[in-house]
Image (cartoon, rainbow, N blue to C red; front, top):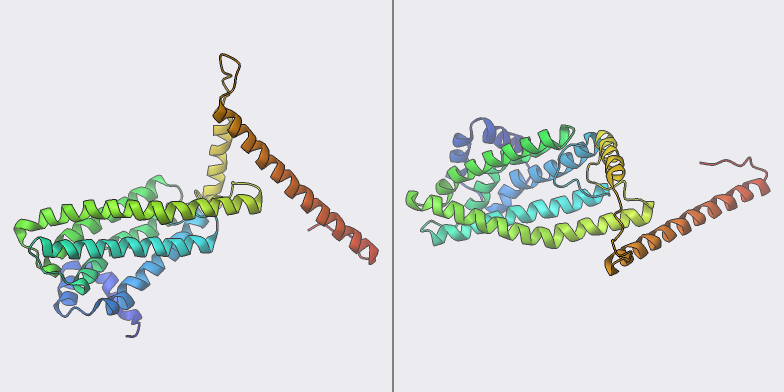
Length: 289
């Protein structure tokens, strides 16, 4: 099995401009799922995640996989979550096809979901290019809706689902897929995001470089919102003059973080001072940078 760049482009183009003919031709002699993954699914998912992360960090555009402080972590976890979501959809659609008097065939289900997901994948790239979340989010949503419509049309062709069962099969599958993706996202996505944010805070002494809203334009917008939110923040002292246990704990956490930042800053200044002293001792002109 070799990667055919021309074949991939042909399937992507056909999946958008002449989808029904492309579906018919591909499913007529449907290859195994490994071939589809190499020809279509793998390259498109990889390109989608990489381009989404790159564009979202340049323009601050919408990307569900760009919310990580580290570039390579964003790509790594984006690929894992996107692949898991895709595989979950294939397994559910294929499994329930047999339940609703269709023909369970993993390779055909894999091909059908891959072909139907093309608009959603490409819309994600376009959404990441446009600065801001609103328009980009609408574009991504539109691509997702088109892909859902495509899946509703192609699954009966691929898995032989009877007309009287296609609506029930599709709705039941979507509900299960959503539930499973929420579970998987909470396990992998949430934990990974928290780890990346904590690592970024400890390394940079600030959470301002969080992946959310990253990008040359998005970062400026995000900082402006932070300043505005800080200006609106007000402390209302308790009526009885006593702090609650939760407030005391929150205050001690702030003090610990502030102390850690001070120690980190002092260590950096000491290191800089040592470097300057070393340069002066060796006869070099001291410099900062």
